[in-house]
Image (cartoon, rainbow, N blue to C red; front, side, top):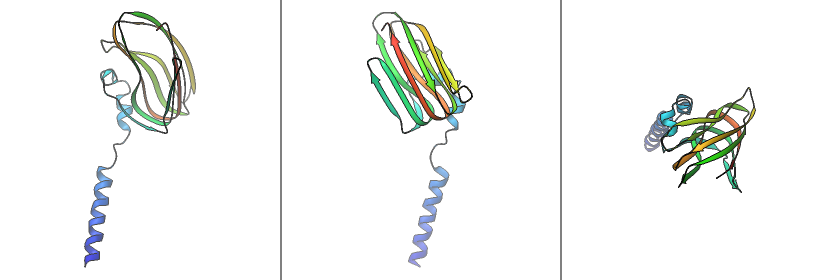
Length: 154
């Protein structure tokens, strides 16, 4: 009888985990074009095997899998600046973009890539005003995503 009670308890626990489980990744697709969520100060992402490096102003970001939005750069400027932002990105599958968010939470796409393109490179001149400026990665269903971002004029 004790064995039956233990088995029942284990099955109940397993069912609870099955039904509550982990958050599925559909939020990322639903929020991909939602500028209010993208501009929010919070990040929400699921990433696997992420490697992020900052080397002499070059930011390298790699994930084996990615869903969501993740801030990769933030700077509070004391005065406005004109900055050239260079973005190279590639992915095997999915959709991803790198966006600039100004202090007023206006979102501007710097580069966007999907699995059909495979790889894109984009150079943008961005007028960064005084205050908190951010760059985020936004994507869904991304596999083997690689991003290199360089700044000139900071």
